[in-house]
Image 1 (cartoon, helix red, strand yellow):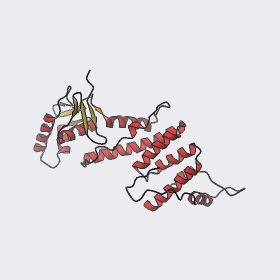
Image 2 (tube, rainbow, N blue to C red):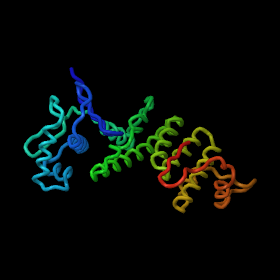
Image 3 (cartoon, rainbow, N blue to C red):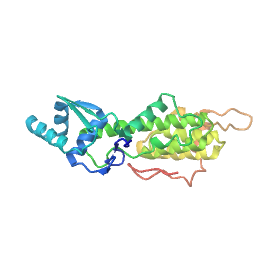
Image 4 (cartoon, rainbow, N blue to C red):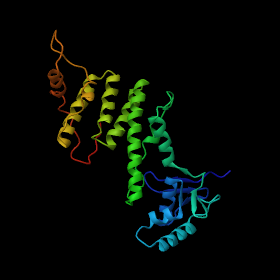
Length: 267
């Protein structure tokens, strides 16, 4: 039995059919990508979205040409029924795996405690890098936000499962994607604390505090500071200023935040 067609949209466009890799024309790629993301659409919506700069008649003609030039497959990659178009139900799309995995994690349905690589589906690349059409930008940002929320939730779940090493991987993946995202940095600190590595947790908090101050001129939230223990004076209970002094004091000279906006942060 022939393997089902596969479409990769994360990291770039790639279409694999039973006979091998296919290379649709540019408009064919755009058509397949849009349909894979939306599952179904009308000819009017497709024509207006993919060819917004021309007349409706011209756009519909371009759509007919793109459909005719699609690689042949059985069943067809796109099923046309009058004005309605639908992507082939057996087309495997990497975006769908990302979405299913991310939503399962966010809903609290994963990962199972015995999963060896719960991170894999969440560590892919961005949607169609280099494509700058409006509908791609909207979908790219939607998937980016979903991935970030899933990574944060996954890190918390792995900490609860006493798997701090994998939790750190999830947290750092979120940090690399968005270095100013506090929830990702909280997950890093929580994972260090779960392993009993208080000094690393404090170092990371201080580095993030400097980064946030340099980039945005603000402080981490009180919720973040409360993750870390107080260090009271001997025989006394630490006040808020004492905690602040503890968390902003020396001892993290070797940990520097990433340089400038748009930077990446590596551990």
